[in-house]
Length: 291
Image (cartoon, rainbow, N blue to C red):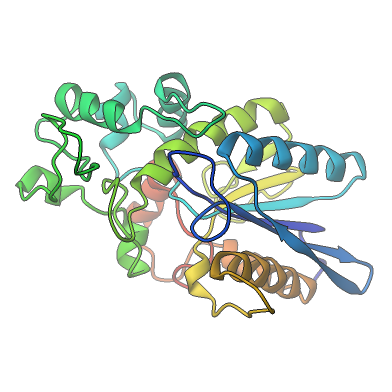
């Protein structure tokens, strides 16, 4: 079986409030299949989300110009639990959510964003009881609590299906404190919607637009990944984030070389039809979860 992709980009994302490098910042790993070899590039460490998307856009354009097919994995959630998109946007579906985030998220070239203000407004205006939680202790937001809500409404949609399949993946509603992914998700989906528009139909978002692994024809496939699935291989001087993105890129390239990567993009065995429809319509999935 032939390989699906030629280039593998893995992005460790960050919701930092100012330019940052090193630990807990953005890292981009890359592996390239070149004939029978896999070439691993040194991970890059852009200081801001703006710089990261500029670098990624340039890299994607270069690879596309060379006729290469690209897999780009990002380590933040691509959706909210089923039912949330309709509450936030008035419409069901991941694409409505991404467009709303692109319109309403403010995230400048120095990493200053409005994510807490936006989350508070959506808590107040869009939900029967607050869903987003976690905030800087030095700031007060009347509709954004520091502690996790305990309401029945919150518990009903606290997790996506994939987070139950892939513990200890965190809830998208948590914006701050240890292990939080909510801020990364909000800022990341907004940025990816910009990237989709820039690519002008040359990319597909997995699994929403690919129907799991049924349609992987687009030159660029964008997907949600979870680097903590893999034990990172460290090199001298590595921070953990750099080791993780390099390890995941190399692992995916090696799996694809032997025809085994498609399986990780396929619908997991045992996933109920109703849950598969939720994942494809709204929630998304993590590459490899359930395999």
